[in-house]
Length: 298
Image (cartoon, rainbow, N blue to C red):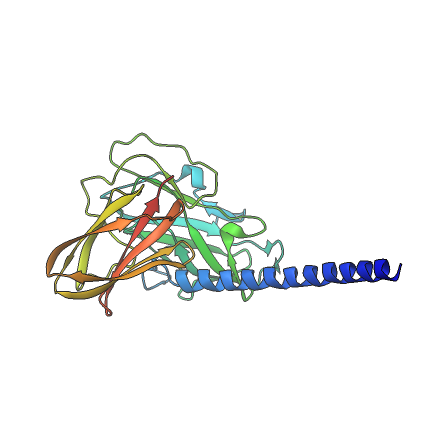
C-alpha cells in the first residue's frame, strides 16, 4: 500500500513538474523565435527614409485596417516601376495586448524583389486609431505568385508579427507577368503561393537588399526549386565568397565557401533535404552581399 501511495505521489509530482517545464519551454521557444524573426527582418526591404513627404494618409478611413483591402490590390507587374501607396487606420486594441498606445513598424518583409517600403512618419510609429500610409517603391521582378507580407511591429513595447497576432492582420501582394490571367487572392496564410510561371524576360531579376558593388545580377533557375537549381551572377573580382541559405525566420540551413572568378559565375544549388517553403540564398565577399528569394517546391 505504501508503495502504491508513493508511486501515486511521485507520478502526480512528475506530471506537475513536467507541466511547469513545458510552459517555461514554450515561453522560451516563443521568445527565441521572436528574437530570430526580429533579427532577421530588422529593416527588411526598408527604403531607408520615412517622412511626411513620402505619402499622405487617407483621413477618411474610419475602420481599422488597410485600404485597398488585399482583394482589391491589383497585381504588381514584372518589369514595371511602382510608387504605390497603401493607406491604413491603426487599431485601438490588440487581443492579448490590450489598448494600443503606440505601434511602431519595425520591418515589412517578404515583399516581391525590387520593392522597398517607407511610411509617412519618420519613426514609423503610430498612436491608437491614427491614420497612416505605407509607400511601396521600386521595379518589381520576381516569381509570379502571391506573397504574404510579414509586418513586424513593436506594440506598446511588445514585439509582434501581425500575421500571427491573436486576430491576424494578413495582407497579400500578387505578382504577374504582363498579360497573365489575374488569380484571385487565396486567403490561406502561407508565405508564398506559386502561380506556375517564371519571371518575365522583360525584367532583370532583382534581389532583396541588393548591394550593387562586387556581386550583382544574381539569378536562380529554376525557381521554385525541385531538386537542383543553378545560381548565376557576375563578380567584379576573383576570390573566395560565402554561400549561405536561410529560411523564412532567419535560421541558417546551408553554409559553404565558393571560389569565384571575375566575370560570370554559375553554381549548382542542391535541395538536399530542405522542406518546401521560402528561403533566401546569399553570396558575400565579406563587405557586400547579394540575396535572392528562393522557393522550394513540393
